Image (cartoon, rainbow, N blue to C red):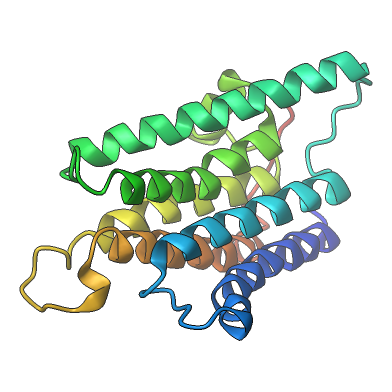
Length: 219
């Protein structure tokens, strides 16, 4: 494992963290009354767009899982359309799972769906950028000892941290504290966001710490 590759991963992850911070700070400079709590739905959209855009750009620039095979333009278009369909299906699936876990079914549909979009951005989009619309590759990566590169190890960590963060973020909602951040889905989306940011920072540090034990085999 090359130290330069770990440093590239760390730099890319820190850029993603910085983009989330900017999504909360920059709009307030030209949007009167903008706050993460007060205009939460707008922030969900802005954060999802910022993270998605940056991840796609980083993937195109760094090319962490570049395939040696050259593909035709038609194949690239087909792959892009499949990625869009997979992402939309992920949003629907996350929406359904969130409702099954207790979110309002009819009320707050917009809030729930935008939260599902945020979760898909933190999880599914990463898989699509790294692995493409290949379900078998997804299953391999998230199986035991399935990662074949530090980028896939980072994908595992950030995905799990995002989901766990969203889950832990639901704990304060039923408490009778009457806080503005207890309104659905603020605490869950903030939990997912902080979990994602924590995963981005933890992943390269964990990989660097365990670099002697990690042995990646191409599959």
